[in-house]
Image (tube, rainbow, N blue to C red; front, side, top):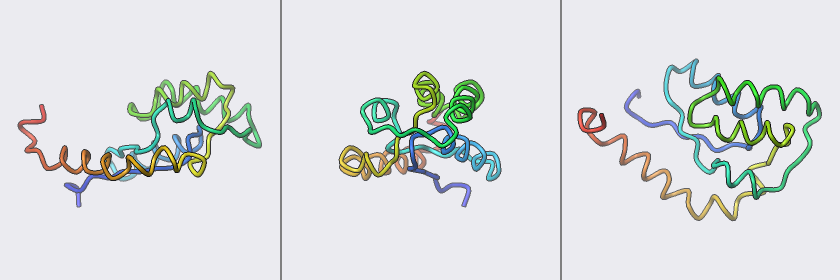
Length: 117
């Protein structure tokens, strides 16, 4: 199954970024976030995590060491003092674009490796 792309859509918060990073390491594969661009976080409904200081610490760490494709989001969360944004509040933004994002991921994976370099 190494030729099948992996995509994930989850909450836009420090903990979810850490989970995706841990998962990618465990399966030794890239995981492509969908519906998780920094501008969705910026415009989304924020919530205060139970341990906001810990959330901010994790976001700062993920901004430097987390998955490359989520570092900008992590940095934005860190600048927002660790506030999170639940994915459920973003349905109207994500769902209309989800099929296209997944199709792009599938198309990119079907491109022969030699032409992707």
